[in-house]
Length: 205
Image 1 (tube, rainbow, N blue to C red):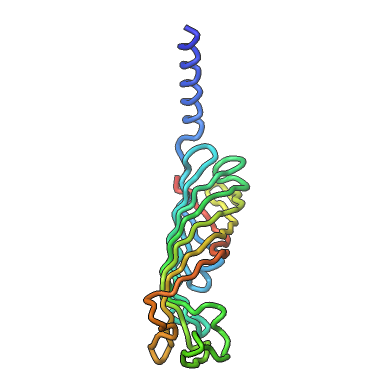
Image 2 (cartoon, rainbow, N blue to C red):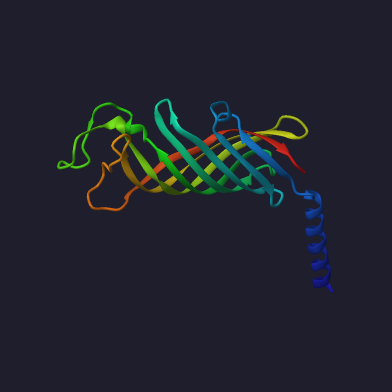
């Protein structure tokens, strides 16, 4: 009898918890930092329970040339977020997994100094070189979200993690590989900040 009462009480509590957060909220969002320069970073964040959400987002930088640098990046990502207060409110932490396809010129290739891939490689001007490849990323997200009005939120966030990249290096005008030493792909592993900004969110439901 006592067991039946306990089970009934537990079931009642679970139902009340479900009712308390139903219907689950869904926000559409866009990064206000990147839109002015023609870069789209947008996503959807969906409530799983009282304190947890899941977010899917895309990052699209279509620039074949931005300030003279190659800057094409296409990235998709998935966040699992835990809010210390309640979903969509105040501080949160999360885990992120992302994948990216890019044709870019890395920041350390912006100089006009000489570049040799190996001692036996031809000498190039560093700023004439770029990278074409893809990355897999696993990282952590931290942020703070707060209400602007009944249906609008602001979400400040940043992510950092391990990035495993596979790419080929090319010369802009000659079209030849500057890293041609018999390998098909170059590979690099780095720990980097790779996401961040200010998302303006609108509640769809």
